[in-house]
Image 1 (spheres, rainbow, N blue to C red):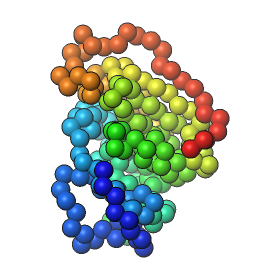
Image 2 (image 1 turned 30 degrees about the vertical axis):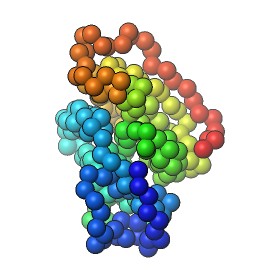
Image 3 (image 1 turned 45 degrees about the vertical axis):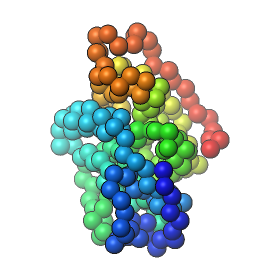
Image 4 (image 1 turned 180 degrees about the vertical axis):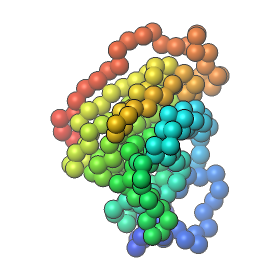
Length: 214
């Protein structure tokens, strides 16, 4: 991961005319440009999840991937791996959606993005009242759903779902179910055989976060 310090007036506008290398995901955190190499596992999760979400939305909202979103602080600019845009949302004068249009954000964590996804983005998404934040972790085969954000930068409810189990995400007046059988596990790069690799059925782990220690 490469970091370049900057002092932007507007996070994404500061990138206008910048000569950035290809093959990297570019975001802005704490006024710094963060460039992360694009990973195979991240791309495979997006390819598996996006068509399922699109079909179930059925025109009630939209889905985006790697699209710049404007946040209330000019020191932060994120382009989520996947984001669900609420029905009726409109672009701002810069031609971008803003944080309050997001119903859900899904990020695929990697070794180089772990701190950003589990700490900095976690706080920002909660403070911006994004209803649901899902972290997909191919290294341990889990999806973690965070719901009911607080202005202090935490989510009250957390649920962990294993790869191979259905990922059920409640939205406003509806819910989305994502099959995770095809999500890649880093310890086994072979295409998983759902009949062979599906984990034994068990109740998803749930717990409630009382306060944030981030």
